[in-house]
Image 1 (spheres, rainbow, N blue to C red):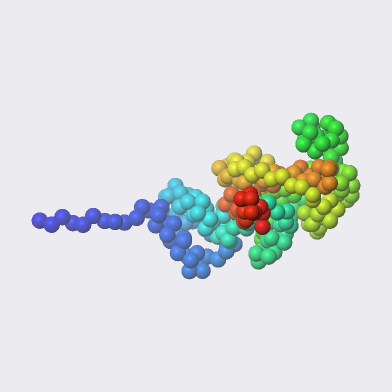
Image 2 (image 1 turned 180 degrees about the vertical axis):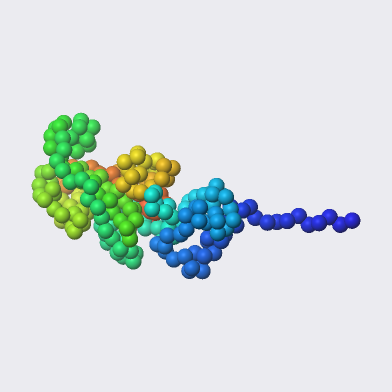
Length: 249
């Protein structure tokens, strides 16, 4: 008696993934579109919410979806990419990639530099520095949170600017030309206040780019830029010189 062949049916969560991926690949679900909620997808696909959640999490990790806390799940566009060792305008990066740039200025004020910050900026502890906190968006979706500390001697009119209309990087490059820059990148699970501003979930990893710039011998800025891992990448291209050292191109 012949044995009946074993079924090779995929796990249900994979079927859900394939169904959503197919709709994206066919253009039924277009970049930036909000897809159905987990509950709605569960009813449509006859799957449990846990199954749908796993499928959406994996599609997000693969870069096909964005999950924005409190707003839903969206079809991802191609990830924006920042040049790792260059200082560019994020507004220009987004526009050049066909996106739609906007920003929210959450903070623009004087502060007293705590000893660790004062040491990094080469100023006296508790002396005055300028601080800005701005969320940069592509089509309304946050892709970068920039926290900048500015040396007032370098850009004395910084707090008078309307950075909802004027790009911060372009302004600083005009008024404080960079003679040296230091970049440090780390992966992290962000603090709650960062997650709130970037609209990411509790377990969404972020990239943090720590930047320090000099104008002449003076430290001009000490900044940290936070990027949701599912929405942004950092990259660069390098070329060895005749000595075998790596330089940026």
